[in-house]
Amino acid sequence: MNKKNEKKERTWTEEIEIDGGELVKKVKELFKEGNIRRLIIRNSKGDILVEIPLTAGVVVGGVVTILSPVLVALGAMAALLAKVKIEIVRVREE
Image 1 (cartoon, rainbow, N blue to C red):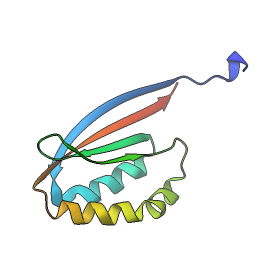
Image 2: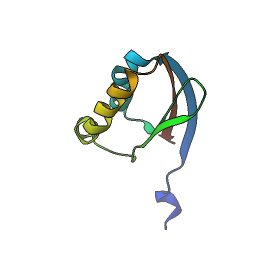
Image 3: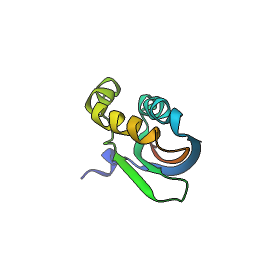
Image 4: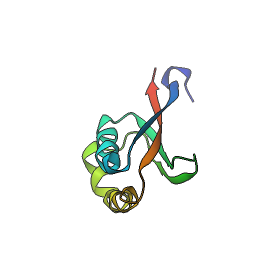
């Protein structure tokens, strides 16, 4: 591979805590940002409930369509949870 064509990526993680009722809305907002590599949704104890890997370069409009079954499941799960933590793994090409 030619060194000029190599792309370097910078990855970082952030964590937010939200009410269960806001989960689907927040996940949709995050999908639209486009620099998300993975979402990990945890309960208040820190147990992983759902891990959603997103491939780099996915067309933003198609993401919500492709992941709509996941969003439905998140909505059902959110109704049962008071608080959830979302771990967001972001990536940026340098």
